[in-house]
Image (tube, rainbow, N blue to C red; front, top):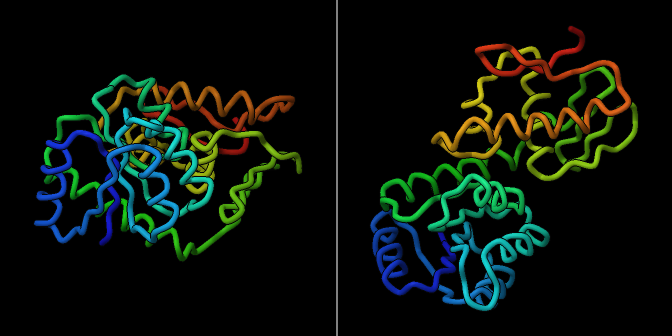
Length: 227
């Protein structure tokens, strides 16, 4: 697999490139944001690894530009900033996963393989339209409507709604939601899930009496039609 690594710390570049080579990854390097963006858009990389703090253009902006022009390329962000706010910012701008420095190459390689499998699964979706009550989600067009009116959702809110509607009438724990919607296999703090469920509820239930996302106390959340 051809990987683009956008990272300006020579020691980190050396460790990642050498380590990933042992797992069969071929890594190209960009040491500043502008070069990284140019390479990402002009070459068919299988996956992009972005540092957040970069000269020229930061990783969040690069991620946003890549996602606009290459929506299917998996993006993993690396940073020393491990606060929930920073993680949410990266994910909201199109990142598929997030790792905090320092990390082990073994875990990084596992994350990359997971992202590649996820991309492969997304290429042949079994179903592209889901509905519950008067809410409809088109997973190909990435459009959600309620009562035929488009919902103005952020990327994270859309992914959350898509996960709920695909798993309607099931109790979903906060950890399940975190791992599936954000594609992260460790607990960042359940408040991230609760905050975004609240955001989604406000947009989904605006001017509607029929609440669809229900709290199952002590267990998580469930999307269903009716109380």
